[in-house]
Image 1 (tube, rainbow, N blue to C red):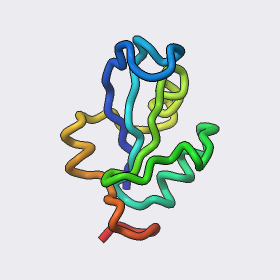
Image 2: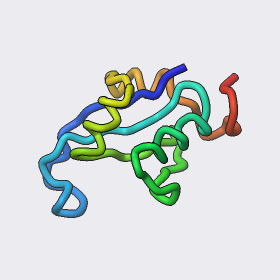
Image 3: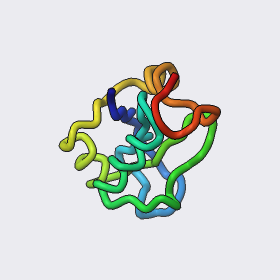
Length: 95
């Protein structure tokens, strides 16, 4: 169905190269396979995947912009929580 991304300002957290940049969480509302394929198309490595309650990739800077240019839909963080595939679901279609 869709690849989603939220948007927030990082401030002074994490590695200094990521300070004060627009950031986002890249998720799928369909499947983890869809998420991994999209992430790979952006040049992201699988080990950057975060298998949390809401599985996602963190994006910053030019990779964030590239994701949006390639069709990721910018939504609110609340929408991410509402629609994202959960970690208790297997790869493949969400139920």
